[in-house]
Image 1 (cartoon, rainbow, N blue to C red):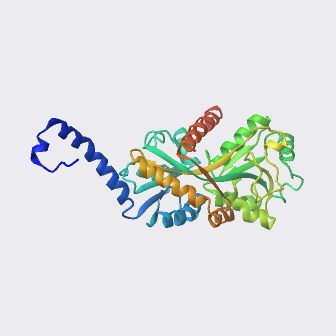
Image 2 (tube, helix red, strand yellow):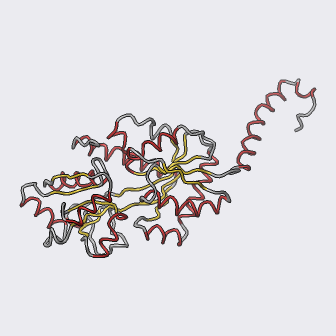
Image 3 (cartoon, rainbow, N blue to C red):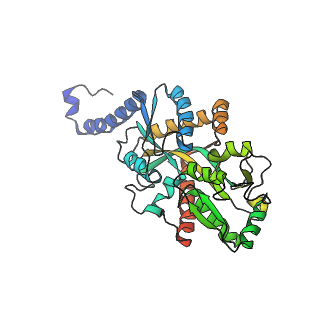
Length: 332
């Protein structure tokens, strides 16, 4: 139907049809034109960390399918809340996305107001990776501790004075250990550090004997023998440590603690763009080279749809929020 004549535009019915048609045409044009320029992935953590490395691996592959560059914008600080807050304020035009990690998801429980609502200000695109968490000990400090039950027995024998460390107060390792203590009815003293690197350094040095850490931070030291892995927190064993039993296998059925990362878009981003990005993410994560690169740094490709990612966000937010409240955990 043509709308070119001035006579047709004077017809109310035709004007109504034109009003309906124009947004559809504009939307189709936008979809066909996108992406017309580089896309930015905000990574709310420092370069070289697990979230940053995984994002770069996946972004490189996605850029091939999108036929457009993907730029990485590291905006670190306050468990990812600084970068996430910036992404929440970005125009929802399909050119800005943010990589969610578990600490950023849970930050509202620990920091209070964060400058964004993780559920209202963002739209899930898809899950990118799982980051297994592993319980390690210094074999020189704890030579007889080779299983989780050994560690629990040691902690009980020392009357709760045995120390453990993590990447920081409120970190995922901290939450996981506190939940395990609650279930196992034993005590250990938390010695938090500011980041995984100094914590692992002092763990190797013998200043603290045990740590629940993400696999990325400790895998090289497990391989070298300077640290001993005694349990993994995920529900299934991990391929990089096939002989290390899960927490569930060692007396705690159903225990499953896995940190993860997912791609989000600012709320209001066009649905067709979100769907295209989710499809490109799925394709990238199905690539064997991408899977091998992720596994090489201690994380695992773990695509889930936008809807599944949203459900996972809600479930983890509630589950770990309860652990934080019950144990009166803060970020201090």
